[in-house]
Image (cartoon, rainbow, N blue to C red; front, side, top):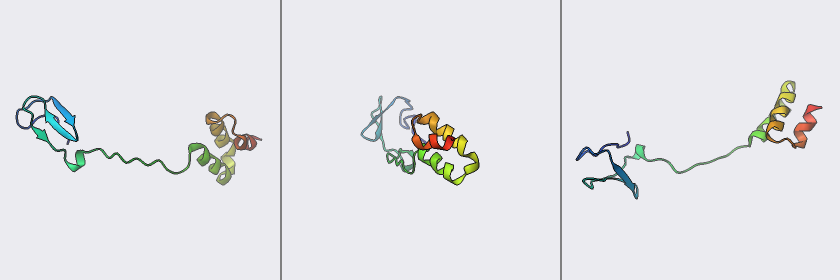
Length: 86
């Protein structure tokens, strides 16, 4: 659980400086626990939504027009999706 109150004086006014929580009144310094820190690593991978829908057009021909319509909502000039409509 994230520290929201100083354990020394009870103040709820804490300032984050250099990864520490510092009480504005008594200047107590607190180190966040490992589970309180926010991971700054972000990975965005895989295929875009359009590419995934294009793959579904190939693998699920029964719903090909629906997927093509969704693609055209995102990318109105997508030539591959236009071909699937006809």
